[in-house]
Length: 177
Image: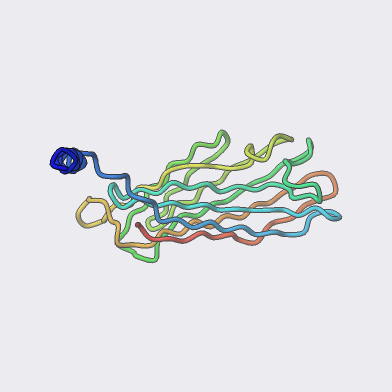
């Protein structure tokens, strides 16, 4: 019996030195459907995950077409412009957004960043999304600011043969975990 107890003590001591588990992100996902042509719908989505340890968030904002057979991309004649706004209700938070899509521009306006992304032609659903990172900084200290909320809102104008629509805004909002 003494050997068994000693074995548990060694395991207990070893567990003390394991690295701390990664913190979970605080997140939110929002999806909006809007009528297109016939039975098809325009689907916009915003996904936001924020991490307290370093004061950053990851985001994805996109669009696709939902048909009776499921989610698909758009037709070859597509031209679309997606606008994604990143902001906080706390005016002391500076949110610095960086996005990764091929045809986009990030405009920084004091309290919010606006990302404009343009899409051309057909392709798989993941072609029509922008992903990126948001760093939250306190204006007065320059340190990460994690006591704020972060909001990502997106809408898209979709134009192809016979269709010219603009979706309503889809917004995801969360705080840091």
